[in-house]
Length: 279
Image (cartoon, rainbow, N blue to C red; front, side, top):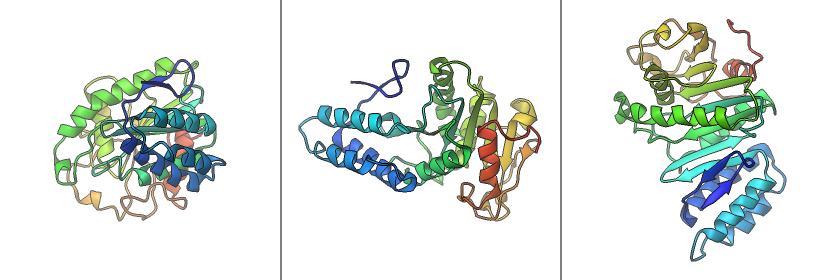
């Protein structure tokens, strides 16, 4: 089944069952509370009537209606334990940021990650599309000592960034990839082992991007890092060196998107092309 989410140039194939749609709708409902989107709860109620149907076709039609009504929320992929949600239009927005969650993230637990993406979109402004990208199998905390999952996700991330550029309506003014924790390893390896289409790579609370020095990836002024003083990730050996660092308040490993954290303001300026190249 084909669903056109963002106009004729962005067509996404969905292979979903009602159970998966329940998860999507649940996350969107939580997001609706955060963003106070008019009409979303009514549309979710219409969708709920189709969850128990004999097939997913009616539910997909309702989901399409939901996406059409809520223009700032687009489900780009929802299948096989993967979820990509765009806040804003990835085809027309002048600035686009891809946010990659870290270890332990699943579709079922992605509500917090959607809230983080929403916080960044709210801070960056309506000209910036922020995409929560969970198109890889995030490892468990114990598995995160290995780069195996990051290597597997890196190819998918490169392909996704290429699709953003090829489907965009004209040049993208600022294209950013943000990785939190293990998500930064995915981003770093994507660049290390190929060409990751973006202007800047940002690592939040991550010891590494798959390399020891930022210059092994690209110009260090295009590689940004922030690690809170009380983030336990600091105890992990092999910290990245030579990147452009920016401050974070002591909100711990998961607090980089907290509204009172200066790290969020820096992120917002960066993804919206308002941040000085060297802070």
